[in-house]
Length: 280
Image (cartoon, rainbow, N blue to C red; front, side, top):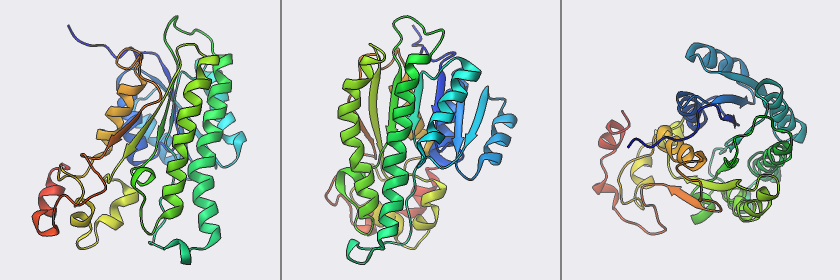
């Protein structure tokens, strides 16, 4: 018997949907028959074109999610156009370059990263949870879902990116708190966290293109390959499904090829050309 996801007709909000993992999630949820509320900060027009060209049932919002009213406006769009938001994917974030140790880091960089990655996540979650009270046409027994996109940096740390690691580690506190709060708005509501490792996105492209970067990145990864955005998106879709994950809440899923905090391979044992070929 085929397993159905139960996502047909669900209303899904995805922040940071203009590229990489966000775009892959939009494509996957659209293929399941979801109605989408998609957010981009500075690339809203690109996202509009992508949605139209793909024939998605989607509305597009834009703005800086460091402002709580931007997240509220996205939820309002979902309510106006689709009658509510059932699933929220907190994906927007930045990973600044270059590597800088905390001792030398500009305080403004610290503030910017934590505000964009962590505070924006809180404002998005806040707007979504408040919006659950206002949904119309809710399917009986089908719980809402909040899924946050963290990072292995939040689990293992990342030298040269302390501010990023802190912003992602903060999501653990949100996860463990909001899984207990969401059920007061939706008795079957669930909250989970997905932690990607090194993933072949536009944000990581420049770093991974540097000589030896792939080999260094995969030294602690048993499965010697990089993740594709679709690899992350498929896990998020499964966690968001009221059928596939109806009893899964408060969990952290690390999608990083078995990464751990110790070296698995020496650089000479990793073939960067083979790794890149496996992304195709």
